[in-house]
Length: 231
Image (tube, rainbow, N blue to C red; front, top):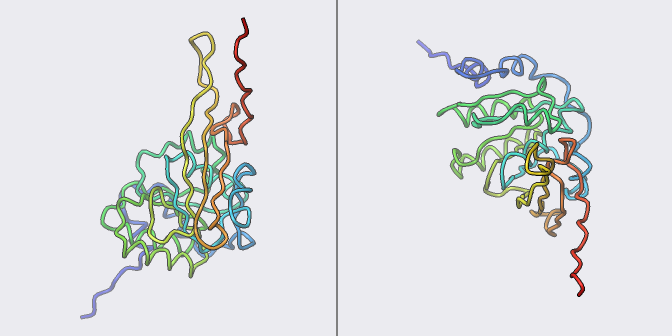
């Protein structure tokens, strides 16, 4: 008797803890967003090759999840689909504040040993797939990058990823607020550096407000230089 092996998408829909993956699987053949580059917020567009996320590329993000959420925001707001795998502590409130369309976001917080199959299945039908890199072996990482390249998806890694096409690092800076010792934090200034291969071989960097006072991300306003007191 021949054993019947379920396809990866079917196994994905049956995993415990999947919040919206079954919905994504049912629409895996939907029309993709047009163009070979997925959009990003204007503050990041000038730092990335092609002013966005090139389909088929692997992008490694260092320095926390805020920058990762910002990369998902503009694309999902314009109709792309995204998935986040293996990040159970991801804050959906923060994602929404950065502009991520939660209605176009699939979550697989604890895929367990099925992580490679889950990532591969989602790369077949989702525009952007984000995964925590610490749980992926180098050989598996290279195979998943090849699949993203073949399928025209963008693979986002939270942390180092072997052979990443583009790497973004975020050096955290100081917060502004609260005033008079109480209230809410207002904004945070960070330094974002981008480098990689090919068109991204020359490193570029910029000072950003992440988040800005309105909760989004913008280019930071230069701070006035301190003047020495005169006698």
